[in-house]
Amino acid sequence: MKFDVYCDESSPDLLYHREASKFSLISSLWLPHEKRVEFKQSINEIKEKHHYYSEIKWKKVSNNHMDFFVDLATFFFSAEYLRFRAIMIESDKIDLVKFNQGDAELGFYKFYYQLLHHWLLDFNEYYIFLDYKTNKERFRIKDLWKALSNSNFTTNVKNVQSIPSKESLGIQLADFLVGAINSKFNSKIKNEAKLSVIAKIEELKGSELMPTSKTVEKFNIFKINLQGGW
Image (cartoon, rainbow, N blue to C red):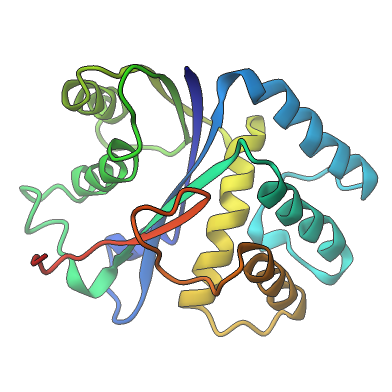
């Protein structure tokens, strides 16, 4: 089968500036390629219903648009073909410079590799889209593609591409979902609308927003153990 994967980050700056008890998150939204048109139509219908015409972002959750974001969360959990995976990285337990030959950017993309590698299944074809960001090294995206291809010999990673989030509803939905996790773990939330949307996500999920086991497929939150061990 062919699959599209849409990726976004939340608080990536914490990977570069260590801060106690704070998490950086990298996320991915997965859907069958054949569902791409249906996915876009569904999102646009929800936007039209609520007269919401801006880019979808967690930071835009407000009382004025709360019903829209509740419907967006409901859509994600009701669409059986959608899956979401995020990894959590504790900023005070990592030194990207020390462990990546002084190259913090390299360390960042190694975490992207960990996010994607474990969900790439044999004999499938994948199209991976990352939210556009400016890198110091121009070949970062190509190197990530090579690493994924070389470690998944029976999987066809067709491309890893960086695109602006405003051009991708998949990246925007990933931003919304990972933003909720970020707020849960990193913020003292005072915004009542965000609290309500998080509560709705937890209701739909059937449990609190917490790290999950690796076997969870619908809404997977993986907290990386940076101290080794089992």
